[in-house]
Length: 96
Image (cartoon, rainbow, N blue to C red; front, side, top):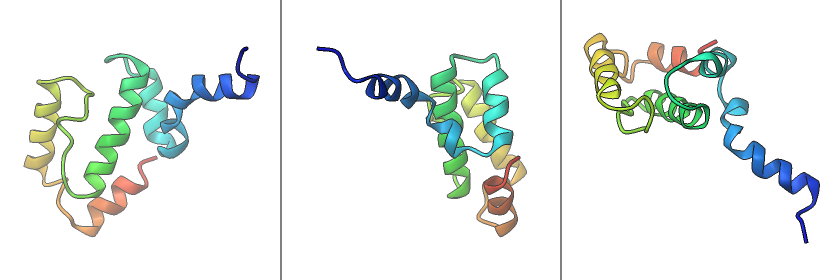
């Protein structure tokens, strides 16, 4: 017996769920970015955004791969971007 059509579509669409949660400016670029495969890239971008909003980096998010993720985290640290200043949280929450 096969699953109802709606359940089949839900299973196929589930990996793309970050597209609904990310601001347009992030999901749009995640679709056209050439580094890695789409599904891990979407999940990684969502984890990076969540981490930055919490005042930390996500070098272990799975995307981008190491050592690039470590370099990105180091650059954000050097720029002071991940600090808990309201400006940084406000910017990260509205990336468009």
